[in-house]
Image (cartoon, rainbow, N blue to C red; front, side, top):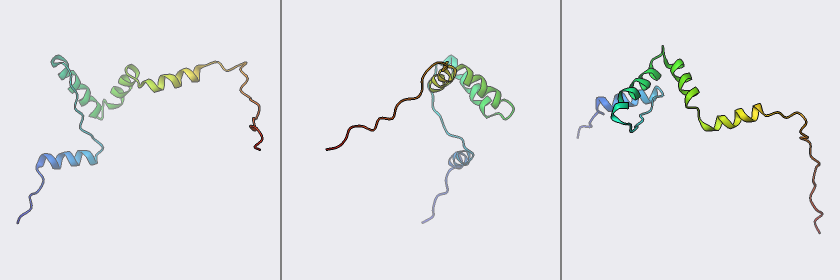
Length: 92
């Protein structure tokens, strides 16, 4: 019995996966589909990927980094950060 070789599409997808790419499915309005494709193409283009990524990160940064930024900017002068060592209670 002969074995079937993977289809060219499967081979291409495996090759892209080894290169660090992943498939992503998104649902957008029909009028936004071309824009999403252009953004995806810019993220893959070596000439534009860094600039595109920076712009997107500035506009749509992950919420977790906002808290870290606020904490780093917090004024800590005059706040006592030392606390006494509590050894708990004696066990009977």
